[in-house]
Length: 266
Length: 266
Image (tube, rainbow over all chains, first blue to last red; front, side, top):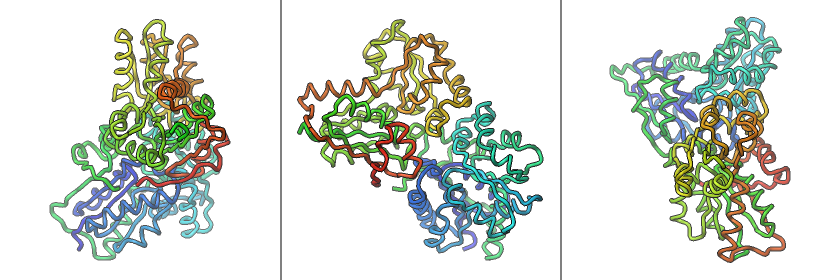
């Protein structure tokens, strides 16, 4: 059981940043990753459709006998985690709880900002999780839908991205938050610009590291840590135009090249 | 036969601009529109997936007994028109041929620029159609993938959109083209900014008007013009979050509100 692979999924390839962090922290673990590149992005869609697509991704991985599931997508974690837990016989870890724990360990003035897709922000999933862990924290959250295309198109250092970020981050900056959760796997690509606007005193929290750490704890607690000497990595996407390969390299490193296999979910 | 509806489809709701123009020019025609909002955008996907989705949209309309099909999406028209024609028993009209005819009627210096999604530009469909109609025309084309999210997020007059447009349009501007085809249904929303960069002497060509005109000619030639006194309009989408309703209003007018019905294609 313990040497079965970890299943990781995302609406696209942003979740590769989480996969990378898991591989780094847990080098004996085998991994199966799937990104729904034929239907990405999810962040502007309805909760109903996000849940439907999320369940299809879950089914894909459960059929491949994974020992646990990592929902490496803030939007799916925010909207459909409960539904996924209902159909999964193996443990499920989303990215929201780990990011919130990290943010609560980081904030000093108990003011936390959250940025994400429309679906993530509208779900209030981050707010609910923060309040659950600490009801005394003030929260300011805002949607930044253009950050994903800006990151994917290689505009992360472009002056246009700076102008967009300045617009989006106005309310979060004036809230006085000392900690900002980057609630979308694409946003770390824009952390340079976000940091510049928020100022050096604001800590940016990204899900990848905290999720890998919580996964390690979860596997340890359940005696599920692998001891594979030669772990296997499989990466699936539902569509693989050239562009996806390029962006995947930006998120994971060039070792991903030629390793993305195409599958169909419908 | 002639009073059966016209079927119009798009990857999303940008094609509503074409539907609007058809309704304006042909007020006796009934219309069924479908936009694949659960899987939009198509412009960054592979030709294979675009064709697959395009065929599903075609099937949806053919089952509803349309008398003809309008592919109101540049990406699907560029990549999958032939495949759609193969399975359709009724006439099929894409948006590329009408836009090209209009551009050729407009250009004086025989230099035409084309902007569109990655899939549209990489297909070279506009270049092939221009060369077919007039081999002596010089063409400069370039992908503008961020224009769709900028238009959908209401950033069309934002300084960030100006900076992005300046980057994208550099090569087309320096080519000396006197006519620029806006090869994506979303781009007319950004025509203010595009015009400012290209200069007042450059004519912008948008598919909606020319497509409605060619549709009128096609229906007339085949004796298929309707004489409905009370034409019906049906609008389907595959996902309908609030945001889609807002953007649909931006493309079609507020009369669309409450008229979008949700269906599933898979």
